[in-house]
Image 1 (cartoon, rainbow, N blue to C red):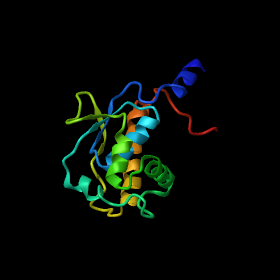
Image 2 (image 1 turned 120 degrees about the horizontal axis):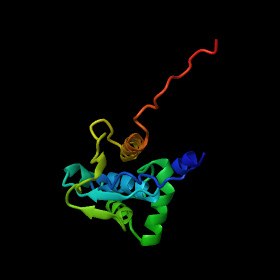
Image 3 (image 1 turned 180 degrees about the horizontal axis):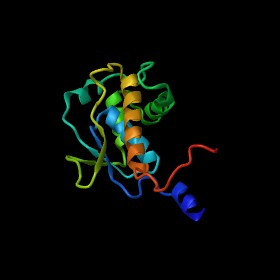
Image 4 (image 1 turned 30 degrees about the vertical axis):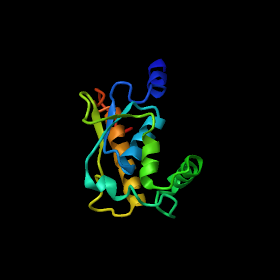
Length: 157
């Protein structure tokens, strides 16, 4: 029971990290902030992708720009900091996070730029898909891959 309690109450990603998000645009910044806010050690590796700048100058107050679960946070950020562009929101999301020019040694990449950008054009859908892709990678890195030894009974009789 103590081992189970220790596993459940462990620090997320304590054996791994830092988790690396490649891309410092709005999508990468949002993914990095989400991981950081959930207790993970995160590093952003800056990207020179042209796609990163596509959304930077857009009006952040425009309806349906962000996923519904993020709209209130963005509206609050814009109001409190007197900002109005997506680039400004990305900059605020990166505040307090480590940003480097390259992937640090030992870092585990959980998001690389706009992975789904060929299939998703709308920013809200792109952010939603990118978040789930990053969460999926973190989940895989933190789940047991070694199957327990021993037999599993499949029939009662």
